[in-house]
Length: 111
Image 1 (cartoon, helix red, strand yellow):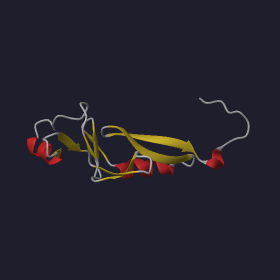
Image 2: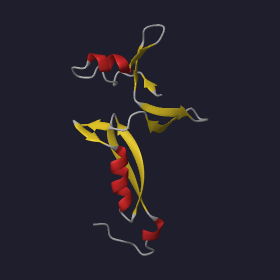
Image 3: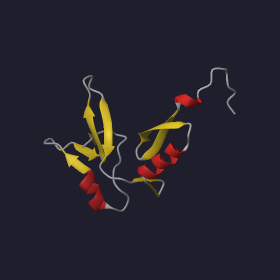
Image 4: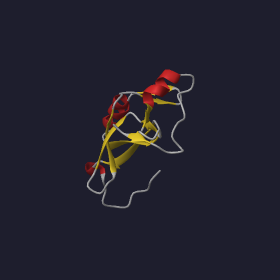
C-alpha cells in the first residue's frame, strides 16, 4: 500500500472524521501520513511504480468513476491502445497511443 507525506496531501475527508482516521497513519515520532488507496512497489532505481488500486471506484468532482467502465469504453475504439494513469489525486487520466494498424506512412493532418 502506498503511504505518503506532503504539505499537499489532504487534511481530511470533508465531514467524515472516521474515514479520515482510517486513511491516516502516524510513525513512531508522530509524523502524519496518508494511505492513498494505491498499491505500488519501488523499482530498482527507487521509483514508485503504481500497480493497482485497493478500491475499484474513483470519486472525482462528486461523481463515481469506475476504472473498468472507462477502460472498456476506450478499448472499444479500433484505433486506441489505452494505458490508464492517475495524475492528480483521484482524477483519472488516460494516455492514448494509436494502434499500429492505424499508422499511415504519409503525413497526416490532425483535425
